[in-house]
Image (cartoon, rainbow, N blue to C red; front, side, top):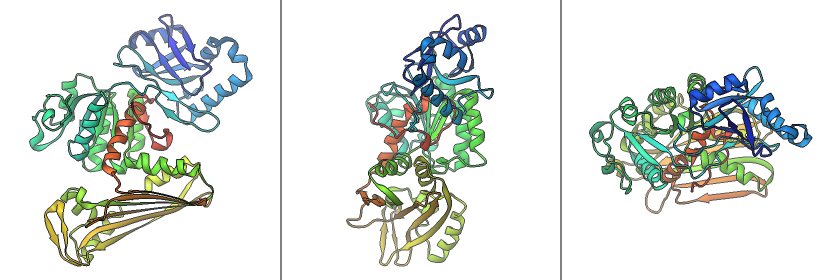
Length: 458
């Protein structure tokens, strides 16, 4: 259902028989729309991007359809799902939708999909073009910038530190449409230079989670949607998620953590599970080459170069951080309608049995030195289906290549394997393909389990 709001405050539904989506359109600017809804008694403008439309006004506007039992059942199902996402006001009188107004550069739509089979939220306007900013121009940031420009989006600015600040963006990105704007040294400088013309910011810098949380909060407070690659934010957690959700709802901006976890580890198991019965277990195994990581990441996050005693202390400290595959697999389980139970985790060193060259650090490591780790997470679910994820991050040699595999123990048993696995590129394309979903969504914190699988972006 697409609802048009007129200057008299009337709500005029279009495509009212399509209840897999709900959004609002108006030729009015936000201040005008707020007045029209208030004086017409049909709703309330919550933010420039979202409005609450009275349910009784919608039912009156659809006319005879409201008396059709089949249509009313679908309408009630749409409202039931909206309540689970806090898209119905606290008093139960109004449903909240995304607003398309002249302040937006291109048509968008918020799809709140809910049929009796549990579709979720997505974007129907897959060919929209967006104004994108990127924070962090390392391997991921520059790769995402190339994809953003290739897709026809506008790269309105980037932020980095050190000697990149002040350089033209076109000196870091090879795409023909790369802007000559200078790299900014802070988010404040970027937002001021853009003059409010940012639809979405991508946080791709390899920094501590507290830094990313500060950046995300700054952007959400200014009504700018956020995509982040930080794996520790993939699953909502006490201490930060409620605050960011509140700040996003206040301005109508949305935030999602995405990457290979989203497309490969949450949604692929669900797609594959549709081809089997009597499912007993789901196992994801992933192998990452340390040489695709910086020396600092290899040393500080993998423990490369340590002896076994040093690694024991390192592993103990790692226990305070969430396991890489833990959150995605819990989200995959929830997507299947399962409730994950308590998880166990092990972190084991991988040591060299002969001298090994660490190419990304330009170092030779002696036999007995740690060259990687294997992190394994396991949990049961309320329906007895077991989940296991094993991430092996190690210096690969010779013909060894990164690989990813998915095993479902069911009838039939399924084995899917991808090698060499282009994990970095998949992460970058996941970010690109999620842009429409995040921009279209109502304000607040999003989860991959609440979204449809990422789709190819035209």
